[in-house]
Length: 206
Image 1: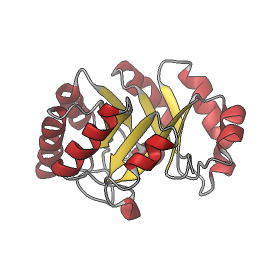
Image 2 (image 1 turned 60 degrees about the vertical axis):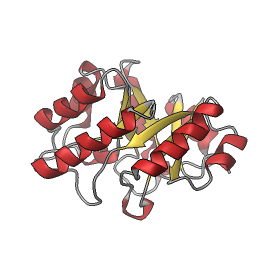
Image 3 (image 1 turned 180 degrees about the vertical axis):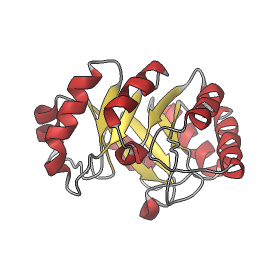
Image 4 (image 1 turned 120 degrees about the vertical axis):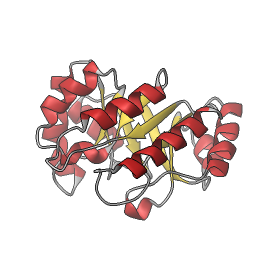
């Protein structure tokens, strides 16, 4: 079981490593669901993690709110990706939607082309999609590595059937990674019930 811990800036990076973090999602402003960290923070965290063999996934999200981005916002996200690649970030976490809650194909293709060949996680914008199963097909065709999803209901325990359905449908074409409400106490139960092999959370290690 791969446990990805979500960290706000460089807070608790060394603690996460001590507690056995295998992968870190690095972000800022968790109170709005996460945004992109500063260049300086990214550089510091990557350096620490590289010394300890821990993978870093950087969230690319220029603001809180929805996942419908204008051209200026998309360019800002592209600039963040270009900068972070120089520091050895292992992958990126992002998602772009249309006003109709579908994958924004042109925006996604732009970011994916820039990221290549590094790993991509499509983040919780997934939970706003009108047709998540159709999106699993498309994201797997784009060779997105994984999908971070909480499911449609507030409590993750209410979403286990849905998450299991995603995992079955994905059929190893793409990783389904539950997050949002995953803790060290319920992680094993969630994994056993849904069949997933990766989990994500801010409280997944302690």
